Image 1 (cartoon, rainbow, N blue to C red):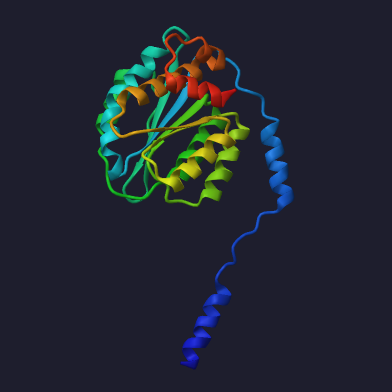
Image 2: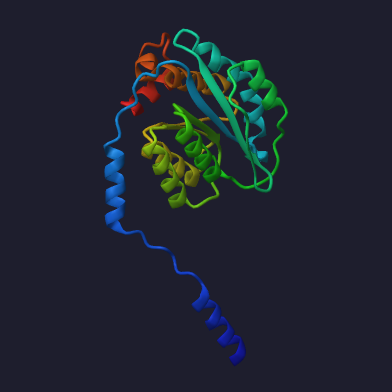
Length: 243
């Protein structure tokens, strides 16, 4: 018993203690975020990352997105072009990104090759990827669609802050009402000056409107979103959060 106790005490002593954040550094970081300029209209072609949780619980929404993504492109024809990159994660540590494409049919073909698999969320990988891409060339918006969050919320907030410094807003669309996921998703949207919206399973029309609104924003900025005809409740919600 004594040997067991000594071994346990030794293991506890070797266990890394939780990292504490310097309040001064936090204040400095938040100050930088407040100084970020508001999003301005985009000239030329916009770039949008479309990221999805492709774990097993996402199967119904993944299938629904196959039809919705084409509508995103049709909605931005009047305000300019849009290049989209598909990012998804699933299974055991699998997180993949497509090439940048401007053809909606090409993106549809890419999405139909993916099937959902069981696994944990990998939102941190999505945020890191978006940061790397935006450092290479401006990414005007990141869309993330998911239903849960199984990661450290503080780590995700830190990564969202890094992305915010590059001026890339994150638009998070949550399926369902998982409280822990909502807390993280709202914080990611807040830090990046994006927006958070929840949709119900099977609400294809609602999600489609939200995706089209973000696509318009990515190509023409806030002014293009304000000038959209036939604004639905989802578009108005985005505008309220972006002001």
